[in-house]
Image (cartoon, rainbow, N blue to C red; front, side):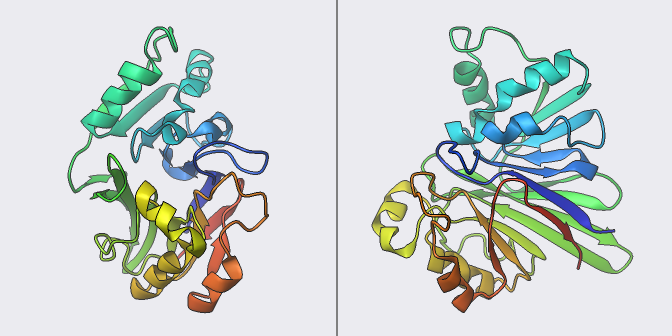
Length: 255
């Protein structure tokens, strides 16, 4: 069985006419990564009434959609939501995004703290792993899902809000699908370094070094009007199986 992946939001910073901000859905696993503005799409795409939502960090583009879960919970489209993140991330959600002057209605979800490097068994065949990404201001969290069936292992990795700094190459090694941020083209290298984001050629070279099978780039700069904001043809000269993420793109990933 393949791992089914849906990109609900593939932009960064703010939503525009082409892309909402980040969320990656694994509907058969009742699992999502990040809670950006695209989270309004999630309730109708899940295969169960429960959702486990893991946050990379608390920057607004990654959490702004969390209040959108209120109505699916009240209308019983969702029976249970568990929000996972570091203590700092969960505190930021509750103390700021859901502060009474901003959003005065309590959302009936449960919270689970994750920290450091760790893992969680999702079921008998799937395990979620995480690892901190230190180079983004305030930090972020890398995630990897592994499916093991008999002697076959399938890996999907999600990396966002980081520079390509060598700290997570082993974590994504031999991923069958790498979902990686690419906020800037190469000519914006100085801005990328200051903001803790990645540039195109670094991401492409990482895919080669980590020996991944295919890659889709997300969290692209919404202020760029061109359809291709990062230079996909140039990235493919380095790593041929590179694809630009768009909202609604789906993958069935197998080893």
